[in-house]
Image 1 (spheres, one colour):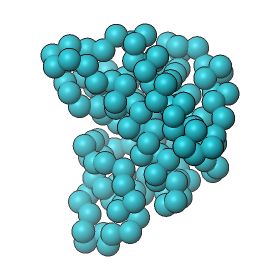
Image 2 (cartoon, rainbow, N blue to C red; image 1 turned 60 degrees about the vertical axis):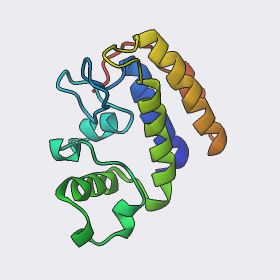
Image 3 (tube, rainbow, N blue to C red; image 1 turned 90 degrees about the vertical axis):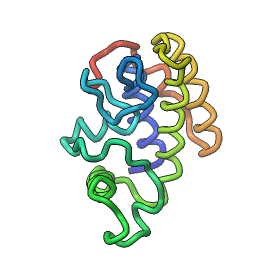
Length: 152
């Protein structure tokens, strides 16, 4: 999988879904919420049947691929194995992490309030655009998906 394919799949998922993967009133983003919404990384994992609830609250870092299994907890091992089965290579972790950060930062709102979906998408696109610049990727995916299409 190329960096462009990874970017397109993750960003395209979020744009199709049209909303963040947060639970109402919670300050945390999820790979998949109880309502079925998925984050930028969760969507492709769910689509492939690779998501496991034990992955929640485990952060994507290069340590998933460099540390011994003895130094990783069950959720981290499951996440690493799912990313590998998806076709993510260790050198793509910085890109994946930045896409995830774009989702999570766009989803932030005032404590106790949910961010409006249209505001989320606008902020997410801006942050994803910065990721595309940093990794020298195109943003044609922005024009491909309609907000609110079924995603997960």
